[in-house]
Image (cartoon, rainbow, N blue to C red; front, side, top):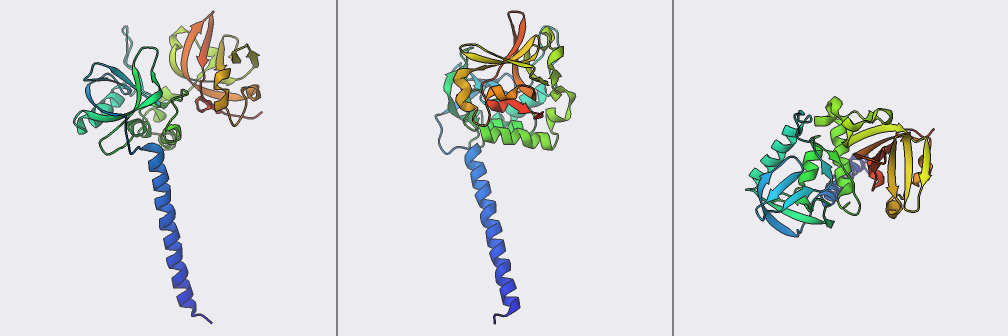
Length: 267
């Protein structure tokens, strides 16, 4: 019969070994999700406009993928909460890297404003969008096909929410009700409401949260909706985040990935 103290000691060592193995396995997976070992280019930064847009020494403007930070006030309006903090944090990271960053271009390399779209990284490979999201200095945005690192960005945003960091500890992040949408709410918003009915055209589904507000989901993005079909969202309460625009006297928000929708109830 084996000595009981020896068995306990051996079991304790085995448990410690398993814990260490699991810890480093988790760390490695997280690192692989958020960082990169190779990059498309190393570039010089000339100017930081805000928390998600920079200008390169080459003259090109570059928009960070995966994050939307608070906007600077225009036309006499005040800056949005945490605009300065997001810009300052991004500038500090770039200064600490001697104004040089590594980039990975998105599958769509430009947006409609002809800005470059890319994930950006520090010298040691840290994902800068992730760093900002984790501090609560912006919202995670998912726009297919540029969804590389989406899991990383979503986890970083959820981390900030959990610990009420930055915007997540301020009324600024409170969703507006779909019924209260007006011209003053154009631009990036978080909107809440219940899907009252669903419309369908040849190219899109329309989730109507109010008579004058709807979420537009183009059918070309349906392959991204692997957990549910947009039709199943009727009568569900949602929070959607994205850009509100006005067309044909109706307020709309285009949804290009299910990560932009949080289902609040299943009634």
